[in-house]
Length: 280
Image 1 (cartoon, rainbow, N blue to C red):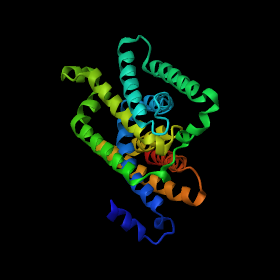
Image 2 (image 1 turned 45 degrees about the horizontal axis):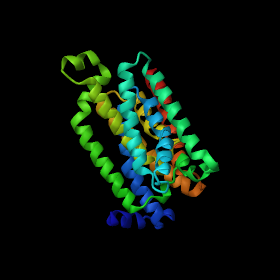
Image 3 (image 1 turned 45 degrees about the vertical axis):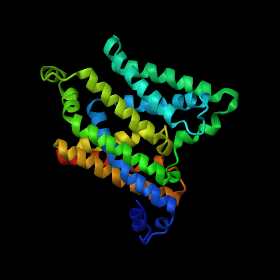
């Protein structure tokens, strides 16, 4: 990692000389492909609302951490709550007569309300507002190592489960005939999504993390004609948007996560235009 940041430091740009920007760039290069691949699976499984719900429910994880005396470092309470919420939503989707978006909306509304109530008691909500917009420029090398671990776990999951998840997302009847446990597969995917989203909230921000996951995948889907092209186009757009947003936020003094989303939206709009032109 030291060699990588040293290489970034010799780039002929002002921002590259600062350690916080070197760390942030390294984090972007790790997390943007991860978000892109996850986003492709989320879009394919029509779970965009679910990943958004997990992000917003991070408030409740923070609130639980505050109650347990982990107000300064509530990551573990956020992770545990996110996984429990993912499992709970999967169970409710299976046994409830309500549609999936209704179940997710109900759970998200309730959990967010609980988090706001707990954190706002005594007027203490302001000190947790940093989680709403994130602070990628504050990431440390130790936290980058945590991101690398999460990325490695996701890669293992991706290689071992992609075919099953893709089959479940496209044809549940065929998946059953192939003896794929649909609900276990969906639950496992929900838990992995919850872990990735929750782990990234403190640097990206609750308000924009879902957009970072969805936009590159949605843009690539407008253009790609094969699954391989879909995945790699999403990853490329995500990395370019991430690096562009990071550097622009340095010069604009703006929130990094939100600035990256703006570039992601540019790619999405561009993909719509390109798709229309190509279709003529």
